[in-house]
Amino acid sequence: MDLEEGTREFHNLLSKIHPRLLPQFISWIQDHVEVLERDLLDNTDDDDDDYDDNVENTDVILESIRDDLRQIIPFSGIFPSENIVSPTIGPNSDCTPQTTVHIDAFLYEEDDLKTLESDGKVSLSYCKDCNSKNVGPFTLITHSASQAQVKYIFQYLLPDLTGKTLLDVGSRFGPMLYGAYLLTNANIEGVEIDENLCKIQQQIIKKYQFDDRIRIYHNDILDRADLLEKADIIILNNVFEFFMPLETQTKVWQFLSSHVTRRGVMLITHPSIEESLKYLKVDIKVNNWMKEIDISSHLSKASLLLLGKRLPSETDLINLHLYETL
Ligand SMILES: C[S@@+](CC[C@H](N)C(=O)[O-])C[C@H]1O[C@@H](n2cnc3c(N)ncnc32)[C@H](O)[C@@H]1O
Image (cartoon, rainbow, N blue to C red; front, side, top):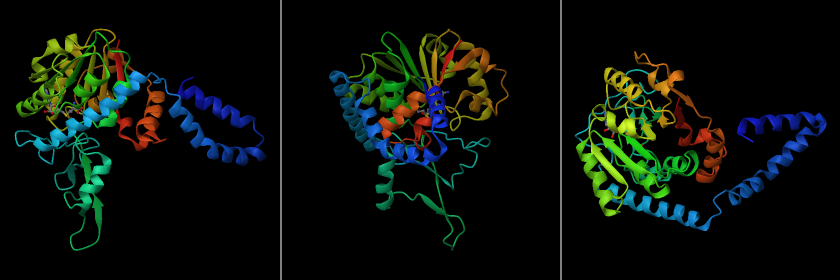
């Protein structure tokens, strides 16, 4: 039963209970939710011991990589060689340098932020009106996937990737690549336009001996139609909005729609393709190109099991979308 069917069945059940008894029934559910959640945690399909060990090892290795990266990456997570373009249109157009803090979600998790703030290393609020106590929160922007997002994708969203090729467009520090290596058998490719970022990924790949299945290409994706054409899974995690002006974004989407044409290719995107195209003058008929897959049941399960949150909207997993080419 998927989430939609389950919700319908639940409403159906509620409609059969005598209205007088409804408050009692709801209260019974509330009391039992924790037990139900515990059952769900015990009942995941990962009862295979080897699989559990693998997931635990993944956490340890990703955390070790994070420690290594923190030593070599500036606190802002941005290199002087990079050209960050503040969006002028769309939901992130309020991200001005004055009110935005760039904190990399792979390097610093939510709990780390509290420690960083109490240590005085970062301020998460700014004074909206000097000399007053009128303070507002900074908008936090990350340019990497968080560890939870990486695990969600490779543990919950995607099918078995044995024999498949996965491409991360704009692989940055590489969390998607390392997660894919540790949790799948895919052949993994990352293309990244910034040379410093490519060197960092190479360093990690060498240290952790991931080089039998990960390759990094220092290129503009516009020069690598070949990588797009052979990929079975393509990740586009906020690649364009903060890294190129609208005209270049338009060009890149036209390029993607001309070269990602094989049937059955899966795309994981943030934001949704519709959102990305909304402000661009492109002639792409998304509905003829691909269909979005309903991932709501994976999302609810992963929110609970990875982050202990019943409401996926409270997590960053909600940002990810899954499509398949037609
Ligand atoms: C938001 S980051 C993506 C992070 C990474 N995929 C992840 O999920 O953690 C976007 C990256 O795309 C890179 N990029 C931007 N334009 C590109 C292009 N035309 N070709 C290749 N990489 C590009 C940027 O340098 C940046 O590192």
